[in-house]
Structure formats: structure tokens, C-alpha cells
Image 1 (tube, one colour):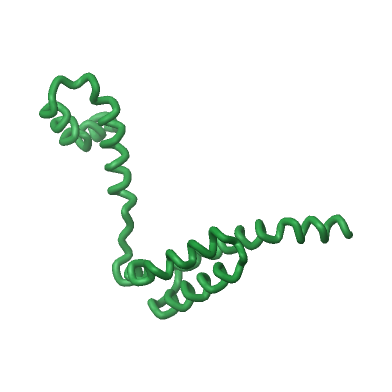
Image 2 (image 1 turned 30 degrees about the vertical axis):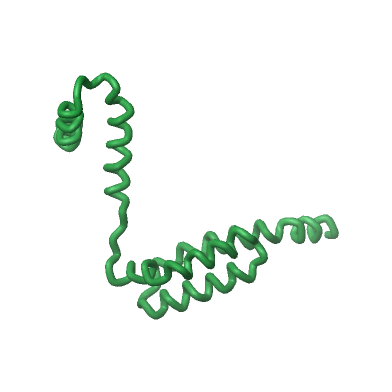
Length: 121
């Protein structure tokens, strides 16, 4: 029993970090903007009190970006599609070393969507 207690004390920061990380995902499922704001402030207060330096810094950063985070409730838009397009362009740029000129590269960019459709079906 003493070994278990020692292990629990030793791993307390890890447990705290894990629960804070898991709980953060609940922010996006709050029913109202007011509930989301309360959840954000409460989460940041617990992160700051955790004693874990990275979470304390994260809490300050999140509170500094509070208005942008809370705007998600009014406009639930994410940048996943744009990030995918940017990644595809980066990949194409890496492969572009063999292209003769910039005009051909631009044509390849315009053709990204169409070529994907042709490959799939």
C-alpha cells in the first residue's frame, strides 16, 4: 500500500495534466456562450492553480485570447479544410523542383481539385 501511495504522489502532476487535457475538450460542447465563458474561466483557474508551469502559461494565453475562443460559439467555423489545402500546396511546392517555370506550378495548383476527382472516380 505504501508503494501505491508513493507512486500516486510521484505521478500527481501527470494525473493533473491528463485530466486538464481531457477536460479541455468539453469546452466546445457547452450549450450557451455564457456556459462556455464560465467553463473557460474555471478551467484556466484550475490550470493556473495546478502548479504545472506549462499549464499556467497556457491558461494565461487562453485568457488573453478569450474573445476569439468565445466567438466560436457564435460562428462555429474551423480551419481544417484550409489547413489541408495549405498542406497540399506545401507538398506540391516540395515536388515542384522539376517544373520549368512558375506558370506551370500555378496550373498545377489550379488542377489540384480536378486531378483528385479524376483519380478517385
